[in-house]
Image (cartoon, rainbow, N blue to C red; front, top):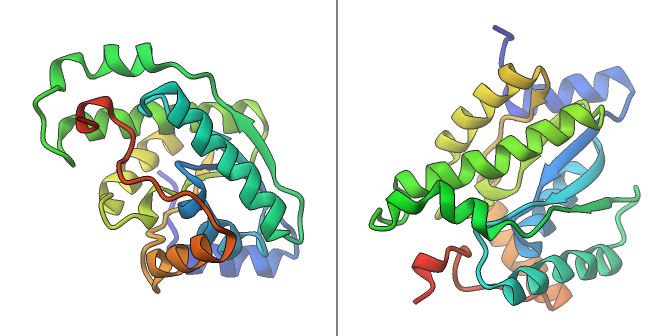
Length: 199
């Protein structure tokens, strides 16, 4: 099993190498991405994967993906950031969570949802020859960073690709995402995306 470095240790190692590794960053929405992209872009060549089949309805999915393009246009990162849009596969999400409808927010349904999205990210990172994968999900105070890191640690081993162990809500990451959202006029949704929670 590979030694897992903290985020600071990983970034220090990258700086020492003099290289900018390729990172596939799973993004749940533009507000969360705003902080994480700003934080990581000095260290990585970043591509975004927008794969969130939990988002309901399709119009909401389209709105959130459009906001990512808006962010990239307005923020003007020093290194070009590409976006890969995943298929809108709400049927796959609904099938995976069909027996978990009564689970509370943060319960077993959320774990299945995280695994679904992050497995796709790890798989695409492997297939695309990326050096790392990561997710913006941990910016939110409503998301369990320990659980996200646990899931991604397992996927890292399975796919043989490095995961950027992180909790982006630390160091006022969430607060900064709110500030950046206001600065760029980003749409901030009031629900994660799940149809069950959107009643």
